[in-house]
Image (cartoon, helix red, strand yellow):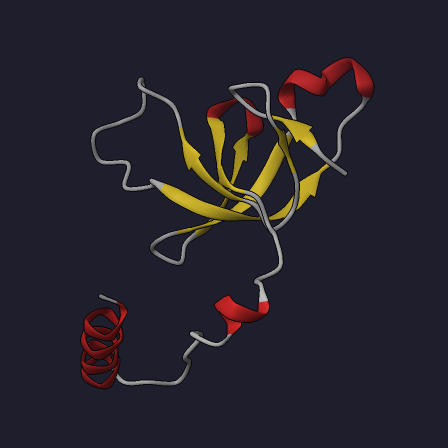
Amino acid sequence: MSWVGRRGGPMKVGDLVKIQDVSRSPTDVRQCGVILEDYPCPPSMQQDVKVQVMWQNGVIGLIHVRRLEIVSEDKELSDDQLEHVRGGMSQSTFSYWRAEFLNDSR
């Protein structure tokens, strides 16, 4: 299922989104997150569609889709992109790998 966000773009589970609500509290640290699940509502309430989002700080919460904008749609990585995926590294190991990778790319 997909929904329409603040700028009219369709959203779906797995999309990276950012919050676009200028009237939010200054203490609100939510900036971007991934849509985890939708909460369907009757057709008469389509303006009130909420989705569950895991925010950049790991907190999971509900938010109206009209307050969100898509940053990146959920798409599969290409084979070339997968060649550069690294997991399970410590931060220091990753920092070293990143520096080497960026220097080799130039």
